[in-house]
Image (tube, rainbow over all chains, first blue to last red; front, side, top):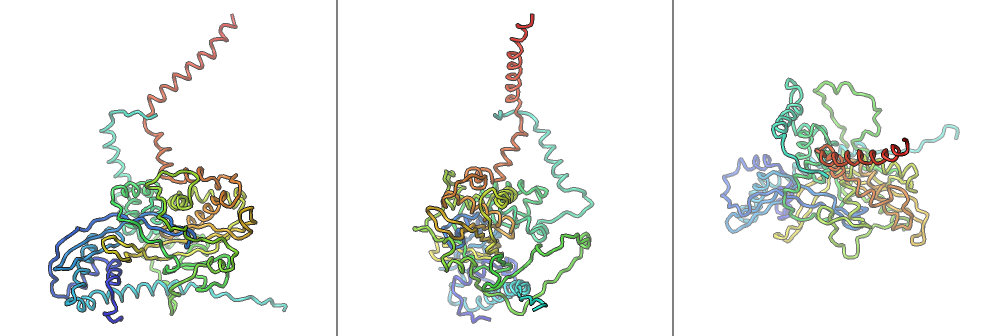
Length: 149
Length: 363
């Protein structure tokens, strides 16, 4: 497991954006109750335009939109933000709240260990498993030698 | 011309109810769930997301259920829903070299860094029915290799690009914000960004037909599949209120790079030219069709005379959108009573005028 102090804000935001609300909630279950948060901007769903590049490296173009849900909350002096693909408002709210709490140095270590590190581990494992399944379909070419030579 | 008519409210209410019952089918058969469609009809879901121009697997699955599997109707539902949502901004351009690869093949280079990865494909199936699938309870287990694939796989065409034999794909000078066909009216000649956006939401069947026409000789080019890759790719965004780049999740993408020999013109030396396909989800046929048509639409820029349908921008871009096409075609089902009455009277009058002189000549 990665040492928790290597996580930057961008890292936990990335991990929370990929986590299901039920998975985050399950990881929070054994922790002491979290302080309440105030909604600054309640979870709302919109879209972003996903861009590509012609040929992968060329001029930008609009591929199409994707649904995104975002949320902003305040816990104490910290504002927590979340943006995640999809339409899960509960996830967006939980992610924003955790983003606020993780900015609080007195809470950070405990939350990194209890929530962020397990999410990182689970997501890494899933990615590796998918990649190993793909790797099993990698082609090994060999040259056929003609029998008469 | 379509004139509004009144009446028929009760009939329309009843048809909605009949539709709901028809959609449900035999009530003794278990109802299909949206999650089942999403998980087990993933290629169909991908098609709906592309033609609906909105990435959301759950919504695309719901659209398919609501539309009884009618792809264009489902795409229409996504397009309509999209218009109700605010747009938060644009993503950073996707970096397809950083894709978590599930499949990656090249028909032009055998030994490429990272290797040929067949992934999950119907390419090598025998197209014989698997009657075991008529029963449920099928469990399947994939083989796992001891090690994952390389984390970064170079694009095959970038390797050939180093020799200068292939057309370069470089950002425009300013790397400007691309035109958006959902907000700006398309004008001709249309730039590459407009063409690619139109093609990526275009009808798979229409683009396949056009790509096939090119292959059969209606477009002067013989494409090779330089690379096709499928996998998950991160979507990044820099929200104004944060001021730094964040990664908001993964989407599944299919990318296709076609290369075509080009003998050169006054403006351009002999080289390989490129066509590009990029689509949501796993959709290789669409990505390949898009790439072939993208190359054909470069005709004018490369000094070719656009003679064939696939090379003609207005023809391709105006007709590839199946939601628009279906809307215009299917509006013919709406009442045209007054319109038709007018035509009917016109035809009667013309016939009367035509027959009038003959009567005079035959006493």
